[in-house]
Image (cartoon, rainbow, N blue to C red; front, side, top):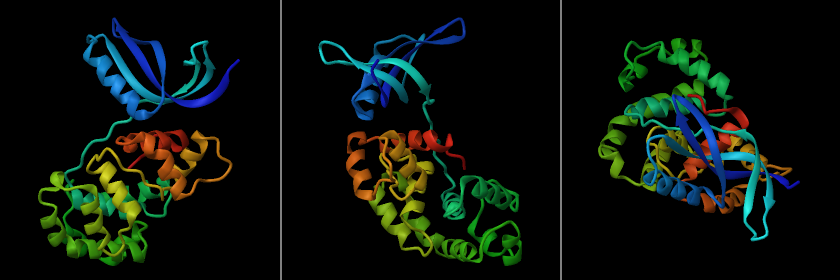
Length: 256
């Protein structure tokens, strides 16, 4: 019997009459090589097959050539997906709401917040014109209301700088946002991941990411920032995808 490990696997699925069955799985050294292998395999395959890169717990063994094999899949995590948001102000407000709260509590407060507005796109002026008492009544703290108001007041200048945001790099966007009181690195990272779908973001300050990283590498204590940055180098330039898997390991799919 081999050793049980959590590893990255390239899985092959075949469609037959509407049914999807797994036909094979192949151990990969890291996420980057898995995604490269996935793209290559898909270019050479027909429509009846699908390849996915997943984090899975396997009983690992090594053959006489030194090649590792995943002999038994214990648990599989579906391939996560991210959709870009075009409502950037609203996305940042959501990130502020989620600061320092459990996902469940933040989701409930943010859901009540959205119901205060008639349109799917929330405008800064609509937020600042709403009474403080009304915002407090849905569960927002006085401090977060202040942060949201500051963002709303500064948004015209920020939005102008972000007029061609797809052409801006992550560092520039982060540096501009952190100038706003109430926005820190975690809020920036969430914006880059869930609003802009940037592929190589790794929020070391996120507690669930820390827990997922510790579980992945069987660590007794939570890792520090330097450990996580060093360990995540092998996932470049797709660390965002790695984060989505780490969230899923601990909490299931990240829920906004």
